[in-house]
Structures are given as structure tokens and as C-alpha cells.
Image (tube, one colour):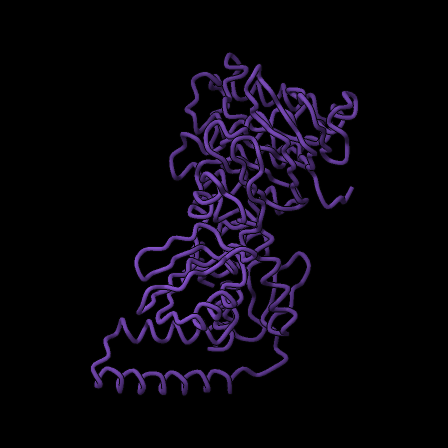
Length: 302
Length: 131
């Protein structure tokens, strides 16, 4: 199946009592890409992932994962055979040893890849006879990743995989994700580590208070997003930015600063015609894009 | 091949890769027939999405600078001689050095020169998109 999107949701909503954790979310995740899923704590990332996996049911709205509708129990089970999931809490089967849990999981999957299993065992230096509960957090994550990748999933979903890992383990984790992506697996992972997302992801989806506030490629952020600061030698003229792709405009004395999300050169030319005497333009980091996107009144960012 | 990517430089990573590989070819650091790492190897080494390498390689292949062979990495194309280009670059470097010397003698600081050059490059191409 070579659909363009591996995940598509339509007004996906999850309510817990009065709380709306996910509100009319329209999320799209492209095939054969690495997509980062960013949001503050409580923004609805985990609730969204649970619905995508069929672990919890949407309160309203719908979605399609790997070409199969989420709300059809049988179809959703079928698509789950091609999805692997690495959860935030990897405490399951704590009483088994590393060797036992690998053999146990392998028995469920006919297309289990022994080469990947052996390669990752070596690469991660996982202790075969040790009980899962005696593993460090980093080791547990690597074990979960091995169990996920040896199945050669079409889609790999990870919820905060690097949480609590040391920098070396994070590097190994990211390398394993890249190898999986090179093998054709679509990777969708949530993270608070914006720098790691900025480095490995092709695409980012940012959600805030249960809604999608930005979906774009890292290439576009690097290429088109610019911090631009204008200086004027007199009182700056009133400038109307409606219709322009700018966010977070600030005016201070004779300076105007903004984040342009496209056509920075046209905006610069326009303000120079209005008498700007100095112009400074600088690239925008994903961290800054994220902060602007989750700020109150974050409109006009796309 | 030693490559360094800067995720926050304001240039897509694949463009940075293209520039560094092109520069290595133009200056003779990489010669015709010499190999480049495969897509998977380079992506793992740089810890970037394989798509970044795919995009860079296919652009370089399109320019005729490299040839990508399935399963065995990429090679610097032997089709054209890059020598004149290397000479032109050395020549350009001399001219830049002369200009900087002159500006410094006129009392312009290093930082100011940097700023002037950046501004010129930024406005000469759409949104500072360098090729």
C-alpha cells in the first residue's frame, strides 16, 4: 500500500468527563517520513496516540490509519499488526528476562526479522538473562525498540522515547529510528526534546490544547521562516500586516520585529519602501517556532 | 568525507549537504570515480532523516556531479573536469581578501564587514536562499 498519508484524522475528539483532551484534531502524517509530534504537557499528544492505536475510542470524529478506519474494530485490529508502538512507560512484563520477552514477542509475529533482532541486541548491548524490572530506563527503552523494530512495522509510533535517557542512549535511539526509516518504516514520535526533533525529523506537527496549531516541514522552516527586525530613524509608520504571513509582531520605540513565515523578502522590500533604515534577518529555530505556535492567540502561523 | 550539518543555520539540511559535497568536488577533495557513503550509512552517520540524503544525492546526480548506484552508494562523476572551477574559486578568494584588507584599512571592523556581506547576500537572493 503506497498511500500518501499513513495517518489521517477528521475532527478527532476525546473527552474525559468535562475535559476535552483532543478537540476536533485534523492530523495528517505522511508516508516514508520521520514526523515529530510536539506539544506541551497535557496538550493531547498521548490521548491522540492512544486513539490512533485503538487503545482508546474517540468521543467523536474519525480517522484512518494505514488505510483502515479507526472506528471499525476488526479493521483497526488488522492495521495494528503493521504498527509498532514504543510507550512512555515500558514496565510491562517486568518479571520476564530480556531473552524470555524477546522469544515471547517473536512467537506472535510470523514476519519477525531475526537479523534485526540480533543486530539490535548487539548494538544496544542488552543483557539477555537480566529481568526487565532490573533494567535501567535506557535499557528498557532499547528493549522496547528492539521488540518494535524486529517486526519490521510499516508505522512506528513512539511516545516520548527519549524521556529520561542519557545523551549517548538518545543518540543510539535516534540512529535506530533512522535505520528503521531507511528500511521504509514511517516514524511518528512525540518528544519534548526539540533539538533532537529538529535534527532527525522531516516534518513536525505541533498540537496545543487538543488542536493542531502547525504542520510543516523542517526544510520550509529553515528556508522560509525568518526573524526580521526593522529600524526606523523616525517614528515608524503604522503598518498593516493582515494578509501577510507574519507572527508575533512586536513594536518597541523605532523598531519593529516579527517572525515572517514566508515571503520575508517581500515584507522587507515593503518596509524599506516605508522608510526602514536598517534590516536584520535571522533564521528561526524549531524551538522558537514551537513557542510561537503554542502561545495564546497563535493564529496566522501557517 | 567529513560533513557537518547545522540544524539551525536557516538552510535546509539537504542544501547544506549539497553545498559541502559540491565544494569538495570543486576543490578536488573528492575526485572523479571516488565513492560517497550510501544513503543509509550517511544518514546514520549524520543522524538525519534518510530523506535528507536522498534529496541531496538526487540533486547532485541531476547536476551531473555524482552518480548514484543502487545498493552500492554514490560516486563522483568523471564526466566533467572541475579544474577551472577550482581555479576560479582560488582567484575569487584572492579578490575577497584584497577587498577585506582595503575595508579594514578604511577603518571598517571585521564584524561590520561580516554584516555588510551577509546583508548583500541576503538581499541578492529571494529570502536569503543561497544556492
